[in-house]
Image (cartoon, rainbow, N blue to C red; front, side, top):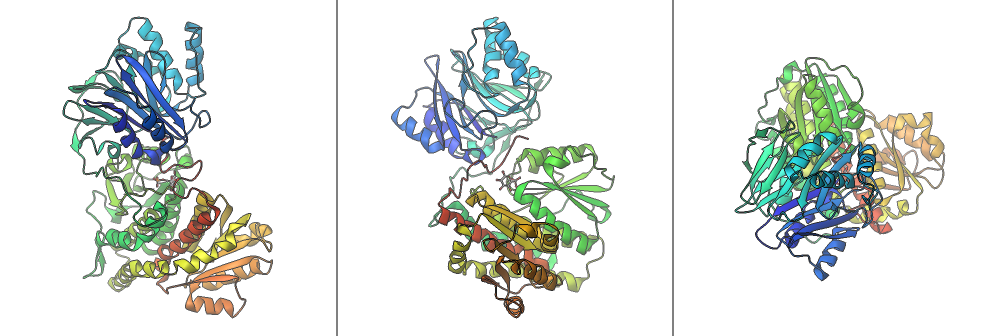
Length: 611
Ligand code: BG6
């Protein structure tokens, strides 16, 4: 999963490519490169590691040219290295690619059979594309004819941009599965993985559709569909800002984003709740919520845990059966989908391929499609019947924080909206829940004020080999999320468990060196949670107890935890939103103590657009 950009410019292109790649680094940061056309020849500059490495290289040796392509990588085939970095090239063609060419070995064998002198210099699947095109150019085909031949041969998901030696006013782009946008400038043309990368260059964007490919020149573009027929595609004016987001006075984007939560939770709630009437006001949607018979929630990573919390809320309040699936499994599972079913997709980026493909599967199965998305104009946003927008703003830190809590805020409102549409949410209960939701931004600010205390607890986790997170009911997904946060950014092994499930196996992991993070909000499951925590403590587990003043008193009446985080007392319904914050902070401070790369942890990326 990578970020790609292509520019047919009327000014030196290398600095523009670099600026564009800075806006695409969330898609991958293990190596990067650019290729430009200089008086006909292809010139490449590539570097292993973060974009800063390429930036340094270009500062010392910037290739000329007004035509060029760029790439930032998240390795799929071949280790992160300069050799495997894109763009890949022969003397005649260069390509920057996002996706996976599944039949690349077969195509490689074909190239080698036809041209035994063909030299493959990388371990990537991508490189075969340039060799295939090169063969056809050698047969006398034009670049356009060559692409028309090559595209049907490629299996898998891809988006790529391509330049050709001696063709300074030509760039070809194609997409199947992975997203690609085309940008119209004044005497310039652009390609990008998303509109965000192009925002500083143009606001006139065309989102290419499945199977589209484009022959672009500075004065315009011809768009073809998968059958090779010319097509017209809509051009929209993007509202996305090109401004690069700064960290402000924070050390990391993640820290900033954790501290932005009171504001963005308020912003998200203000679009879905009428504080005066204390009622939910979901955006109008072409979906009759009162007639939904079953809900299938699909998402990945942190977003999937938001879906798990929503299952408790929706089933509890609205009585609609909910199934939650990790999208990569749902995609290939033959689960029956009823005619009156709703597919509910949750995604910060709106570009996660597994979730997008799960959405397309539900679409094919006649489900209504509702999504909770943070990134406007993203693929999942555009392919849904309706969207609940989480107003978290751009989230740069790879480990999701504010997007998660705003997803929960939106899903809580959805659960209430569903219950009211089905006539099972009495006005007094709706008003009480609305009031509890409206309190959340302030309560989160109270937890953030305990930052120094929580930072101090990180020392208890820093040296741990295993950390266990426990919760019951809707607090269980928060335990899963807490463990994921710690894994993502501190690289400490951690597991989240339903507290009641511990005694059926995971409790074997507990010893005097195992920190146990107990998530115990007030509510009907508090006592049960307490007894499960006691079972772990009895085996030496080092309990860090998260609960209200009253909850802590009841815990301490039975056993003194190693440490505690006193949480504001809130309605049990909204507790998952609030209890997500201290587990984010614990993970953040532990990672800082360990000195890991908090914003761009190893092996991860902000959005994965390959399967
Ligand atoms: C991973 C991110 O790549 O994708 C996670 O590192 C995220 O933070 C997951 O939760 C799902 O992403 P999205 O954009 O679909 O919510």
